[in-house]
Length: 280
Image (tube, rainbow, N blue to C red; front, side, top):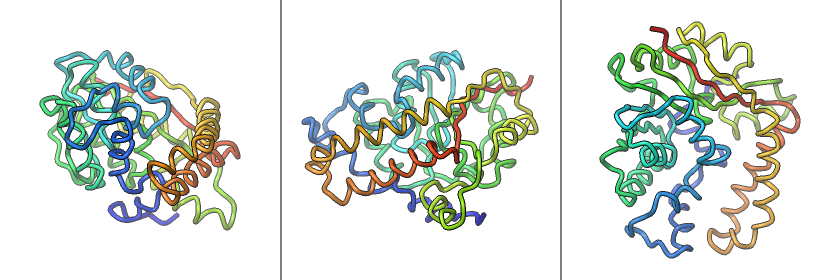
């Protein structure tokens, strides 16, 4: 499978069209640009993973995040996960995002929620980012690590970034079976799977990097149902979405939601929720 070019090919994913679309959702509720935003309003729109803040609260509990903790997030998108964690716990978050346009919008949203003192946005390729050993108390990532190439390298980097005893919390995809024939190119375009590995290889790679897995939940059934319901609900809200974003924008998101529901329902991909310690 060809390794895709991070800085350009990731835009082939239908989940990552124009990031400014979130402003249209907010304006439809009466929150014009530059107007301060309550975090609990913004979380209705800024979560690009499954189950929104419910999933984030599980991570907060699993890591026992405290106000004095420093957290690293890899693949932060609009910054929604980082803002919720900072708001809910008082911890300080370094949110690393590859895509410059998403990082730019994330910075504006964070400023509008008055969380600049606790959320630092970094626009960078995580593989190229310099991080001192033992900088962070915890590292987190939601549906992002499977996009990044050189799995061994980035897991070792995550391990080194943590203090001894620090925890990595991840929700991620794993490969169940390869798509057949003509679907392979479509699969690569819509999923951007640079390090999508089997479930067994996922745990082996964590172990080889030095991590001690303390929690592992297979989320495949849950996420199969979630992606199916998400697609159904999105289609039912078609006219409302088109009235805010336009027909073409609806079709872009509907395509991605349909693809993901299909990948899960046909047993191509599965999901994992994992917590793992850096060994002392």
